Image (cartoon, rainbow, N blue to C red; front, top):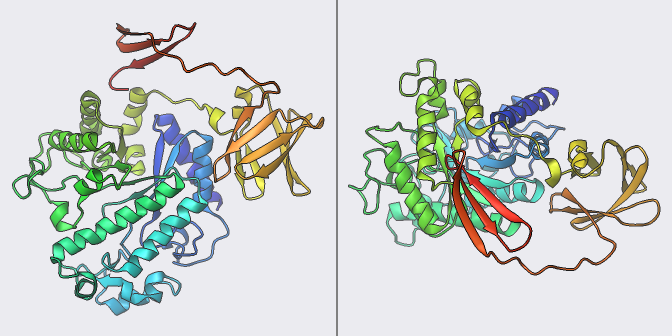
Amino acid sequence: EESLKIETDEIVKTVRDTGLNAVFLQVRPCADSLYPSKVFPTSVYLTGEQGAQISFDPLEYFVSACRRNGIKIFAWINPYRITVKKFPDKESAHDSLSKDHPAYLAPQTAIFAGDGRLYFDPGSPDARKIILDGVREIVENYAVDGIQYDDYFYPHTDFDDKESFNKYGGGSDLSDFRRESVNTLVRETHDICKARGVEFGVAPSGIWANSESLNGGSDTVGDQSYFSSYADSRAWVKNRWVDHIAPQLYWAQGGKEGEFETLLSWWSDLADKNGVALYIGLAAYRSAEKDAAPPWKDGEEIVSQLDMISMKGRTDGHVFFRYGSVKGSALIRRLPERYGKRTYAGVNAPVFVTGESFEINSQAFSVIGFKKTVSCASRRGEKVLVLNGETAVTAVRRGNELKAVTKQGKTPLLFIGDRFGCLSLRIERTKPVKQEPPAKVTDVNVKEEDGYTVFELYTGRPCAARSEIKDGI
């Protein structure tokens, strides 16, 4: 527990100081969990033994650490993969699972593939329910900003799913059945996330299809996920079954298989036309390889790709695979100069409620006038915040609100929270405030200033909105 806390704090601090603003945390490597789960066993990568009991919740701690530092957190999931180790047959692979593993309890939901590994059968409704139950468990119990699926769908075309195809195929073509099976999981996952107000996305392989193979494909010659893993990622975007798409563009500019600029334009067009956010996946791991050669060496290619992304101006962000590669390469020195070191502005989340206790960020309170938070306690089932060592405030939870009552019985403070108990503080006014009508923009001025493009919106009142854009930021 202590080593995990130290590692988490170091990761979050590095992310913040590097200038990044989001973390995609792998929470399900192999149909397991890096948090206490009622659906999946505890991951072997967490305890050394799959299904071992834990008294500490790494995901909850990671979420809190990100919240305190103004960093978004997405739960990153491999939906179908059950084992990584190769086995000679299904029986030995099945016996390697913990006795509470859903694939052990329901072996008919798993397929032993030609690569010697176990996968959930995408065509099985029972397997899909297990995956969706796991997603629902996360979004209902953790304050994550989003869910993201990795690019593991059908591992290859040699997949023994005759039984599910015969049972559920309905006379369709096998390839179409497989693609629709994945589509169904994507649609239903989006429905779950949308109902909870959580962002959902997928990080597919960078090439949907080559133009020579399929109309509308990209001008590339690489592996096509539409055919090889039955991932119709273009359909997900066109039907808006995802809130964001994060294609893995792990090729260099000028590359033969999947030229970076070509794919950047293809995905930008697709996402732009369909109103889906686009996060470009970048191959930071190539810069961290010991024998990294040009153009990847010293992060040169990644920095050049960032320049191109900024120049195109039609993406919503980029994602580095992976943290260890950024920290272990020249990128860790080059990114802060690009983004600028972010400073913590905790006004949006000064208080966190975890279970029965408060976690208070005194820096956030200092923004709104409180110099120091001394302590917090629980008295007769109510939460008590002691601010500045003198102001005792009793906070009573009612739904998404915490009413804070001072000793005098007044209610100057109101903590507004989401369903997870991450709260924002607002000052309640004792007198009604006259509501001003919405401001009408009367003039727009665009000018260049110190290398920035500056947009000024004038409303006829003694105030103006000002937005500055430089290098696409």
